[in-house]
Length: 528
Image 1 (cartoon, rainbow, N blue to C red):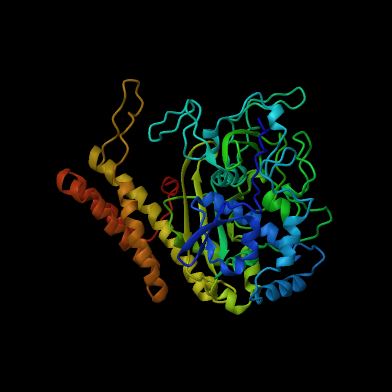
Image 2 (image 1 turned 60 degrees about the vertical axis):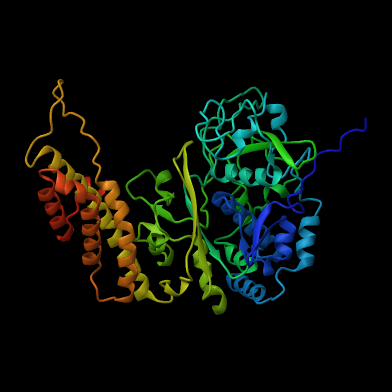
C-alpha cells in the first residue's frame, strides 16, 4: 500500500473566505482576496465574529503589502501614501501581494507540522487528548452539555470542512471562552483550564469602515501608528517558531501584534485524510501571563473614573437587542477628555481620506453578545448608511444633536423600565401597601414584573422613528418626543391588564404623568 499523502490546506491559496461580487457569492483564499480586492464588493462571511477577526488579520496584511506599516513614516507621509493607494483603479500591487504570500518566512499552511497557521503544534504532545470537534464549532453542544436543539453529540462527532473550521478558529482566538479547555502540560505544570482568561474581544461590538470595494475597505481599516515604536512587529504566521507559553508576552507593537497577536487561546486542528476536513481539535490556554494593555482600534472605549486603574478603561459591550443608531453618538463625536466614552481610534484617521471615499464610507457593526465567561447569546451585524458627513469635525451641530437625541432616548428607556416596574408593583400590591412578609420576617420575594420587557420592546421602534424625525426638525424637543414614545409603549404593553386588574389604570396613569415630568435622577432608576 502506498503511503498516504500528508493533509494539505493553505490559507493563502485554498478557498475558505466567503466574498460577494454583485449578486454572486464564492470563496477565495487570502492571496486572491488581495489580488482582486478592487473587484470584490464585500466579505460575505455569515458568522459576524469570524468576519470581525478576519478584518483585523486582513488589515495587518494590507499594511504589510502597502508598506503602511513603516513606523518611520510621518503622519503626513502616511496619509499621502494611503490617498495615493486609494486612487489606484487597479487595487493592490500584484507583485507586492505575491511577494508577501510567497515569502518563505511566512507560513500559511494550516496543517504544517512545525508552523500550522494560527495554531500551536506543541499541543499534540502537551495535551493528553484532543478536546473533540464539537468544542471547536460554535453552536454545537460539547462535553456534558445537553443536545436539546442540535443533532451533534460527542458520541458521534461529525467532521467539519476545513474552510468552516478556520472561521471558527478565528472566533476562539478573538472571542473564546475562559476555562473548560483541555489540560496542557508545560514543564511540570498541568493547569486544568485556560488560565482564567477569555478572548480579548469577548462580549464586545466592533465598528469597521466599509468602502465601495474591499480594496477601499481594507485601506480604511489600517490603523495609524500613534507614538513611537522601536521593537520589531510580527504577526503569528511571520514568527519562525510558535510562541513559548512560559515566555512573557512580547511588546504590543503596531499593527501586527495589536491586531493579530493577542490571543489567550491555543488551538491545533486535527485533519481528516486529505485536509479538506477537520476531524478533531486541541483547545487550551496559550499563556499564563496577563495580557499587556493595548487599545483595539475598532472598539468604543468607556472610562470609569470611580474604579481601579486597571479596570478604568473597558470596551463597549455587545447587545443583540440594540439597534445601530443607538451607537451613533459614540462614532461621530470627536475625542474629548470630559466624555465617558471615546470613539474607535480607527475613526480618527477617516477624516484624512479623499473626499470621494469618505463621503461614501459606511460602517459595518459586528457584535457578539456573550457573558464574560462561557455563555454565548447571539452574534449580529449591521451596516449603517454613509454617516461620516455627520462627524463632529464636519458638522458639529448635527453631531451634537445626534448625541443629544441618543442620550434622551436611552434616558427615557431607563425611565420607562423603572416606571413600568413601579406601576406593576402598585397594581399588584395596591397603593400604599407594604410588601408581604415571609415567616422569617423578611419581605417575601415578589414575582418579576411582566410589564418592563414588552414596554421596552414596543418603545425602541417608536424611539427610532422619533430619532430620525428629530434630526430633520431640530426645533422639536427631544425630551417630549421620547417621553411620548415611552407613553405609547407603556400603554400598548399594559392594555390588557389595564382593563382586567383593579388598580392598573391608576398606576399606569401615574407612570405616564411621571414620564412627562422633567427628569429627576434616582439611583434605583439608573440601575435599570
